[in-house]
Length: 193
Image 1 (cartoon, one colour):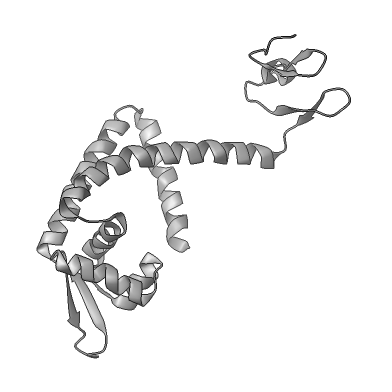
Image 2 (cartoon, rainbow, N blue to C red):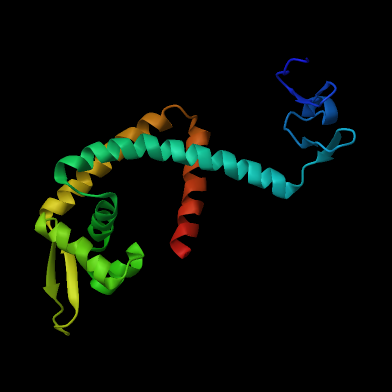
């Protein structure tokens, strides 16, 4: 029986080694894959869509790991105040906007108005936000962050800035600028959706 190679495709009869891309094309990036059929082993060139998908899969792994790293720290910071992630995200948004209507909150959070009302009620019970009626229309409920809520957001943001500074210290100045530029483009895209 033939042993499993480190790099190759195992067929019923023998192991067929996969040539590295550098051997095939002179480029270091992998741009081919092996497909098995009942006949001989055939190599196909990867399409740009395949390369984009492979890059997207790698990025999804990176993003999940970054979220795990930062979210674990964020979770530890939020736990003492009994604040969930959606509640914290709402507080952070209120900290920038100061006052929002319930319908604006529902839209921003992707919730129904009733669900947004429950989210706000929990934050109000913790004294992180206040509700009041709009001056021009008493039926319209306005929500604003309190000093206690703003202090929580500032404390968490400072923790995040400290963590990001540690990451940035591992990058060159050009890489730091490139990361900020790319994340700014991604942020703009997300804000337009």
